[in-house]
Image (cartoon, rainbow, N blue to C red; front, top):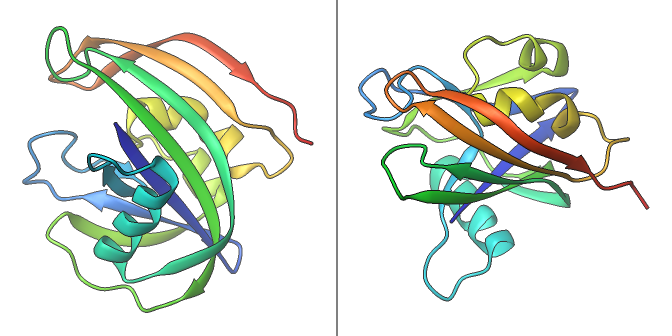
Length: 159
């Protein structure tokens, strides 16, 4: 189980350009985040991972998407991923061995070809504050090239 955070600030969104040395998705763009620890809930994990990776805190947090990835990296292994967004509150971005953090506009992000596959398929819902929470599942057809096929998508209405 993973939890990620997209940070909004001054009309831009913070994402990580993963290091080319990473085993999984080298060079791909992805939000800050990581694995949910045992006995930890996803929202707490997303805030913890954001602080650990970036040094930032956020406010006005929204659950943007809940994703199931079916066999993304190896057979018989599924991932459950929670994507949150929040408005920048405080902190200074620090360096990380994971890659480089960059601020992109909504347009740059939605047109980015190098987004992680499940993020790419959902990014228009994630960056549009008028959309509800997206619930989606993806089947990975090629783990080596990060090729995924959208299986199900449902958007729950806002308010």
